[in-house]
Image (cartoon, rainbow over all chains, first blue to last red; front, side, top):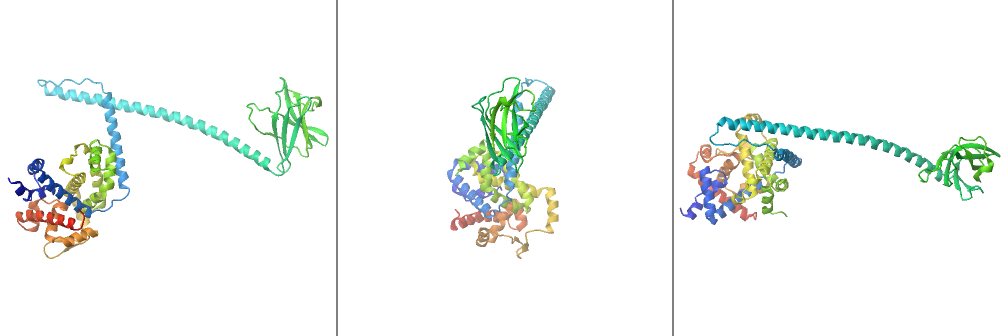
Length: 276
Length: 183
């Protein structure tokens, strides 16, 4: 058949509009492969239909795209699962010999499927067990983190309170200087009668000999009152120790006492002192 | 800008990135075509989903020698939409919807029914330019999935006339696109 005749016969328009029988369509594709002019005409007609479709374009609802991509993602995951189990399969498949009974083939397939299902459900079970273990681990981790957080909050609150006092205009600083007993020692008392707060900052103090501890005293009208034991910073970090607030304190002193707080300061063992 | 060849490669590898790109480019046209066939937004959305999932699954089979990706997608869309209009459940629903159809139909006296709800400028332009008799056969075939014999029945014209009108109709359409600088 003359190619020009074929091209102008209208068969290509029918092909592009999906009106050909499978036989006719095969013929068209054959001609297209053999004759570039046929291929060209088909391309032009298809392009025409594409533009026709574009004229009818209406934007679909915006959420549709993600819905579709999500579905495909899900299908992808399911595909991955079945691919994985195929890799793990170590079954020997029963050989299909042509002379064999049809029944053997089918029972072989059935056995294969049962094993495959068994393996699949087992691997799913294992996966779930693993997931549950992970979950339990995560849960206890969360508990630890919660506890840590609570501790940090408490510390943070304390620090904020201390800072507030230090900044406060009504806070008096008292430097406690070392006596002959401990000449290099230094401590600072922050005393705020408005807030009724007293903080002690131990800057430098030698470790007390065993069986002894330091004790803080307030000088009120010439008499010394016990303010409690002085904790030496164990980790060397700067921190303020909250001490009891005693009104009308005029000065402070730290003495070395025996373990177990003494009621009266051993003046001879006074290490630091200072007055407002 | 990603080209047709690169998209084909992604499709053949079943890379879902291809689907994202194709959606951005063609979803509106495909949706519009589906909507014109099934007259329901809900069904058209489902069709779009079916089309893109199929495109992802059958991407390995796409052969660029047979036509562009867009043409491939259009054919999948049209076939799916027309299949749905032929299903019994759809026909039942359509009967109910007939009472509150969104497309106003009018009979222009020639035995044709026309949808007046054309709201796109380009489409309206073409509708005005192209002879009605060509438009009608193309629409019946393209949007209603009629075979040529069904067109013969519907319009009461001989088979030869149907073939000729399709041929000339497409030729006129092509001329329209060339004249308006689309091509």
